[in-house]
Length: 360
Picture 1 (tube, rainbow, N blue to C red):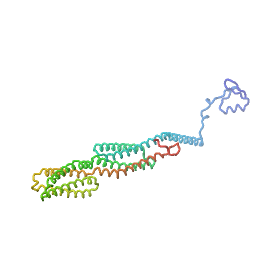
Picture 2: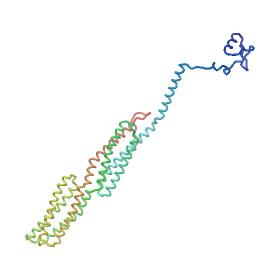
Picture 3: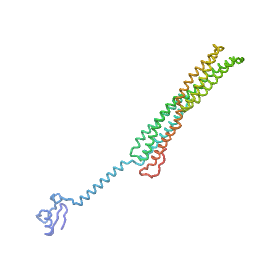
C-alpha cells in the first residue's frame, strides 16, 4: 500500500483491504484509487459514546471533592489572620487596662472629695470621680460588644463578675459623693469652734465681770452672785466641750446620750442666769444682760450644730469609703485583672501556644 501526497489517497493492493474499507462505510471506488472519508463525512451515530456506570461514579466523586475543596477554601478565607487576632487581643487588653486605671482614679478622687475641707474642693473631686466612673461605664459597654457569647467561658465569667461589682460600685459612689459634698460635719465644726465659741467667750467675760465687782465684799449677796455666775459659766463651757465629740460621733445612740447631758447643762445655765436676774442688787446690770443675750445666741448656734451633726455626712461618707467602697473597688479590680489574664492566654491560630507578651 502506497501513500501519495496531496489529497489523501490510499491504494489497496488486495481484495481484503477493499472489503474492509467498504465495511467502514466508504463508497466503492471507481478505480484502484479512492479518497479517505474524514470524520466529518461519517454518520453521526457512528461517533456517539454513552458513559458507563464507572464513568458516572468517577464524575460524582470528582464533583464531591471539588465541592469540599471549595468549601474549605471559603472557610479558611474567612478566618482572621494571626496578625488580625493579635491586634484584636491587644485592643481588648488595652481597653481592660484603661478601665482598671479609671476605677482606681474614681476611687482616689472620691476619697479626696471625702477628705476635702471646703465645699469647693469637695465638689471638684466629686466631679472628677464621676468623670472617671463614666469612663469605666463607657469601657464596659465597648467590652460587652467585643466579648460576645461565643467568647471563651472564663472571659464571659469574669465579665459577668465585673458587671455585678461595678453596678454596686456605681450605687455606692452615688450615695457617697452626694454625702461628701454636703460637708455637714465640717460645717458643724466650723460653727462650734468659730461663732459658738466666740459668743460663749463673750458671755463668760460678762459673768466674770460680775464676780470681780462683788469680789471685794464678803456679803451673802455677793457670794451668791459669785456662785451663780460661776455655775452658769462652768455649765456653758461644758456644753461647748460636748459639741466636738457629738460632731465626730457615728452612733445615733451615743449622740442621744450626749444630747441628754447637754440638756442638763443647759438647764443649769438657765437656772443660774434666772437666779442672778432675780437679785435686786443686779437689777438693770448690763453685764448680766449681755451674758443672757450671748447665751441665747449660743443656744441658737448649738441647735444648728446639732442638726448638722445629726446629718453626719462626712462621717458617713468616710465610713462608706473605708468599708463598703474599698471592698467593691477591689472586687472590680480583681474581675478586670482576671479578664485581662484570660484574654492574654487566648491561643492564636498559626502561632505557638505560649502566653503572648502584653502589648503594653
